[in-house]
Image (cartoon, rainbow, N blue to C red):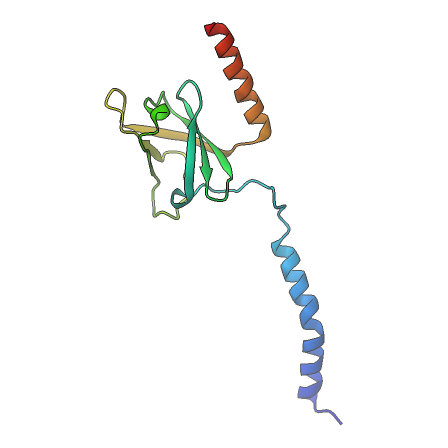
Length: 140
């Protein structure tokens, strides 16, 4: 005859795989191609200025893209001379409204204040391409 402890251990071991599968599915509920929620300063990989110098497309190490919008024109972005991203907190802090991008341009303001940080979607990419084409057509 089995003891109550042995019965409990058997039931626990039988239910453990189902519990582990349920926990794994809960963690994987977010689709793999879903945009990240946070742009951490320590994970910044690359950036691309948007024409007009009021926005910046930033790519993190996981290749998620974010659009940073500034309160005013931010000069010197197109030269890739190196930017510094300053968030309130450590390198694990997420960039947010009020944080700064520091440029090394002597002609413009040294700090650009961020007004928004949003994931860069396909719709935004199409709108930016359309605006760039319109600006190029107006220039020619």
